[in-house]
Amino acid sequence: MASQLPTIPKGTRDFSPIEMARRNYIFDTIKKAFILYGYQQIETPAMENLSTLMGKYGEEGDKLLFKILNSGDFMKEVNTDDVSQRNLVKLTNAMCEKGLRYDLTVPFARYVVQHRNDLQFPFKRYQVQPVWRADRPQKGRYREFYQCDADVVGSDSLINEVELLSLADYVFGKFGIRVLIKLNNRKVLSGIAELIGAPEKIVDITVAIDKIDKIGIENVNEELRSKGLAETSINILQPLLLLSGSNEEKLAKLTDLLRESETGMKGIEELKYVLNHVAKLGIQSDVEVDVSLARGLNYYTGSIVEVKAKDVEIGSISGGGRYDNLTGVFGLQGVSGVGISFGADRIYDVLNALNLYPETVNSSSKILFVNFGETEAEVSLEYVMQLRKEGVSAEVYPEPSKMKKQMGYADAKGIPYVAIIGETEVAEGVITLKEMSTGEQYKLTLQELVEKVKK
Image (tube, rainbow, N blue to C red; front, side):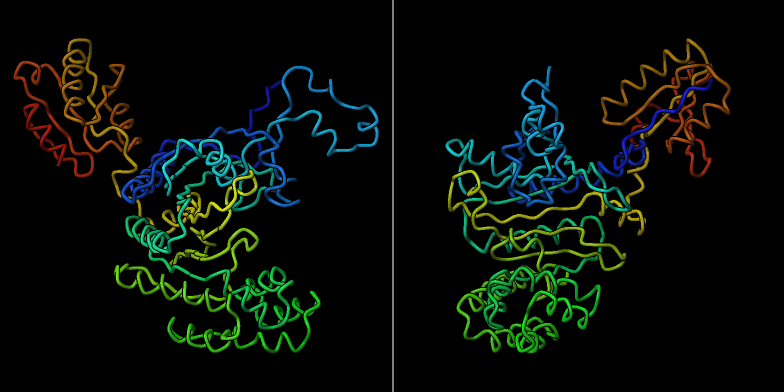
């Protein structure tokens, strides 16, 4: 009976060498940008205590946490009545003390509180690590994926927001991706809720208007009615939903509509500050005020940012915003922060769609030495070591196989150069170098070879 092929869990992926080279290009580009902007790297454990994670993402989020069974006899604290009654909450509490992290933000909040006496505030940190969610796998949604986060905590200054928009512009400029940076402010959304006389329905209102692009204004209005919003309130809301024009024109209309709302006017002033300072920096990306942008509304308290690719139909590829009380859930009140997260997996899809990877990303070794036998291989190994000292990635084919097989290996791996050392080359102290893309061959000394390959 044939054995069954092994598989991996749904919602997870293997990555081939070429895929890993491309992913590392993404991670390395983002990390270099974080460092350039003054962020310091930290890492937190893959697992956290469930007491740290539970209750931070809402009821739905709690359901999506991967829980880890306690070591040893994980049933020892379990009440048999809870088993028979399938009381999942009590069973989970009895059997699981830990869970896989759901995002990087809550572990970061825990880190700040736990290490607050050792940190210099404002604290600028970045993290590039995997997270796990017990979600239903589907296209573009995985159970294991990476987040690339940068946050500043311990500062209320809007300069931090300006810097984050500049950072996003820099990163996507490096990738060659044309993007639109959308900007809003939670205080503006709160002002809108006040304006229409329904401040208690701010979540319902913004969840609905966030769908304008997907379902259209009439369906948004219908959803607002279903949430109990009065017809008069919906009518007052219409000019805000249909805001158009330049950023200056939108802000002028918002100022006119929200002039009676202190909170709303504060949000408008913050938007103006960020836009004015970003304009002075001369960033290349388009920045657009979008009143319908709501992003995780319960979480953010000020600026809200979302980045979309212009040339590929895909969801947001980066986003973030200001939160006034990151650490409050752990008892340390009043530590404001602002952050941004880059979606590595979606950036990967965009770069693939637009074929924007540098050619060098896909190659492994720069040069392969053909193996003709023991004597030639010994000389080749010496040359390889010299090349590596010069920073050139090189390898020797391990067996003296047929030339066709060895050349096929180089071709399959995308190795741009092949070095041939036979009896003649050994005697003359030279190397025959073949350029795989053109088929041209050159006889070179080792130093000449190093210079050519490095070019």
